[in-house]
Length: 120
Picture 1: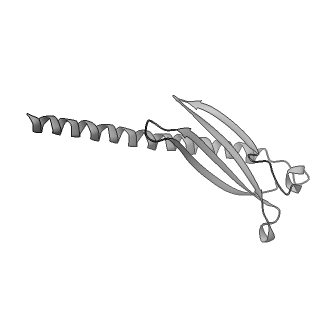
Picture 2 (picture 1 turned 60 degrees about the vertical axis):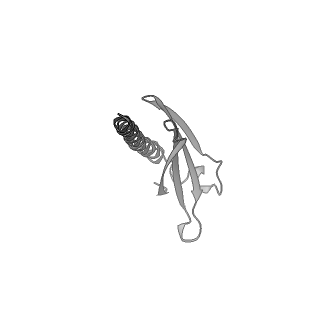
């Protein structure tokens, strides 16, 4: 009887662990998709070369922010810009960080994507 109880509790613990792992994986896919969409929206709306964005030497951090509710989770996106120097002069490094709160025990989660962009 004792062995059956231990075996049953072990199976339940493994099932809970597997479910948390699957939830985190799906959350990461959603966050990466959101980060990609946020980046693309910024890139497609870039001002022309004569715009003030391209002459700035520093940017407020973050340059843009957004948040969205997807399912039961709230995802926050922040876009950071870093002007290029030297050989990368005239280019911007764009980084999007997306954060959300994971399930119990996982704490705050984060994904990040970056892209080097130039004036259209």
